[in-house]
Length: 113
Length: 113
Image (cartoon, rainbow over all chains, first blue to last red; front, side, top):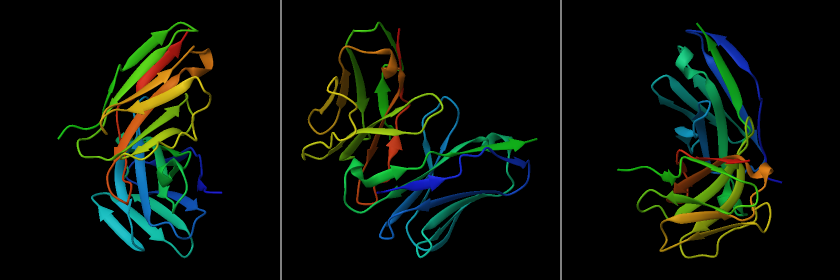
């Protein structure tokens, strides 16, 4: 069973704080991992891709991957109210159907001014 | 370059009518996906096209749903004899390469009265 698990939230952080979003997945052999941001009433927008263990930074966003522990996280530094959205974790599983990309149900982030 | 486009952006129909939703993927992307998202819910995989291979239809909820992809590019999702439970946002995504980095269109909001 291919699963991607996220805490549904809501996760509430004050403006300027670090928001930490976490995701676990079931297939140890997975190779590609993504974070999408979805504003209310909009479609998901790809914000980070990570393929190797360790950290990948892009502006205020850092994706962290630990394949041994089967988790991937997204850190948002200096959180802004405009970061308030639902964040979807997606994992590209080996083989199988659904084009191999399995989405978590998302974590709702609220950044309070 | 242009992103994924979908039309119409909104569709209101009466129960029992057929509807067609269109997706135009990013040029050069070989894979195309249809998802459904009901209000406040996660993404529900519907169908996946990869190149000239037979589509993966494992997510289609009933035989009222069908999709085709002509010339390896534009795709049409058809829902016959629509029901109120078909009301949702229908999202299309496309990708290229083995990492399966998917880019979403803006979606079609379907309302069945």
